[in-house]
Image (spheres, helix red, strand yellow):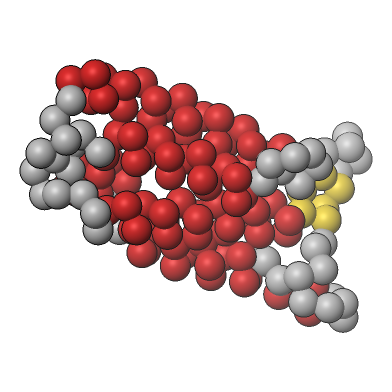
Length: 136
């Protein structure tokens, strides 16, 4: 597909979709959103970018293989459950670190980031197999 309009739209949609997907990822464990939806939005941006350009340009934009992204996300999501086991609670019981100023961060964010990467990598790997090499 060699569309000038889609090429221009891809340059605009990719950064906007990545910013929106990171916003959904960050607010996901307190409000609607999270890793799955954020990963889908990010993958949609990469898909719109890659459709008129082909597989090689999509993979270059990702800067890492899609299967590597998905695999690292899966590992991170699984590792986020280990602190629960170490504290004597069931697997994937999330642990939280709360500072005196009220800022809190926990293993739920690591799980969401893992899901985000797994979904992003999986969808981009799927899409990349259907793109031609030259973007035509």
